[in-house]
Length: 128
Image (tube, rainbow, N blue to C red; front, side, top):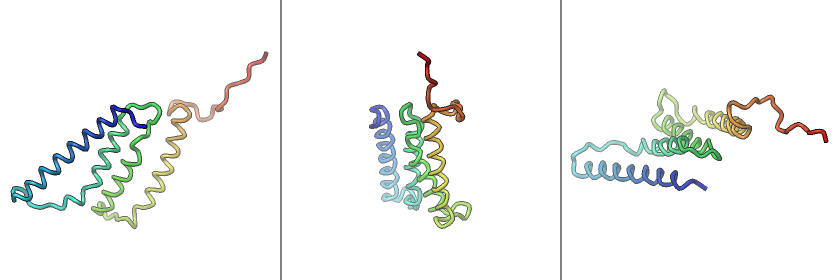
């Protein structure tokens, strides 16, 4: 369950996004702005929410927001065909991201990056 502070941050970010989007659409309706293909940039909403999820301080879920960030970046690169990369060329990056998330999750479960990966997960027995 997300924390109350994070929920407020997300609601605030969504509110600001909706107000800005409404302002831009209204300006386009009154011919103040030229119509632009805004639809091509919708994945940036996922990127922003992913960054907000990663920057929140919840020690129980340090990777919250990871997938929103990854999917948002992947969709943006693929939709705009940045560097000549479309969906056909970039889908294997999701497999890589999945592997990275499993490795990061394992690292945080063991106590973070400072933990010794060679150390056993059990405490030594005490002699009576």
